[in-house]
Length: 198
Image 1: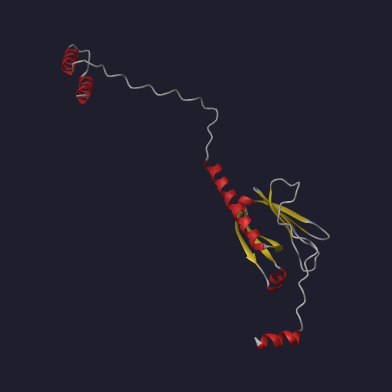
Image 2: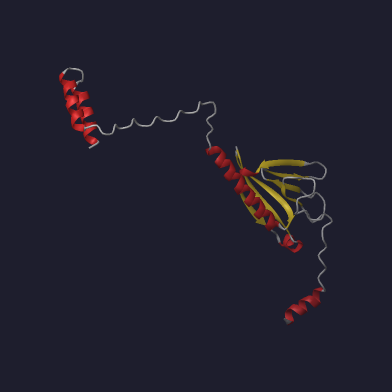
């Protein structure tokens, strides 16, 4: 405890942390329906802050001072989200969120720099990406068969006549075979059918 006090006395009181001139935007702004999360970066210089926005389907990011670089990625293509925070960022209460996006030509890293409350950003981007991937997977696994006529209902099996004597049926079957009306194969098949109902 004494060492800490001596260090504080030697260096003087710590300067207060000044808030950035840009207020953090963590709540969806009014007039932007469908926005799940948005934020404005808070760089140390206060110049060139990135603007970021997340919807259920897309992640938008825009940066630049003299020129603007604006892009969007489908949120279902986000495969991983990580948090990086330097010592100066920690002191200012901001952090960088690294978003890994699966593109057709490979993996791309997108860095959302100097975000206020970066842990909340990581959580909401991860949850939204997971939900979007699930929806896309279900869509890919769903097959639509349009244009096919509706199937007719299957015919019920022929009712078994009740009260018919199976022995009499077998005699009649034998007579039809002897008369040459039924072949031996037809006789054997029908005989087996009648005997299976016993």
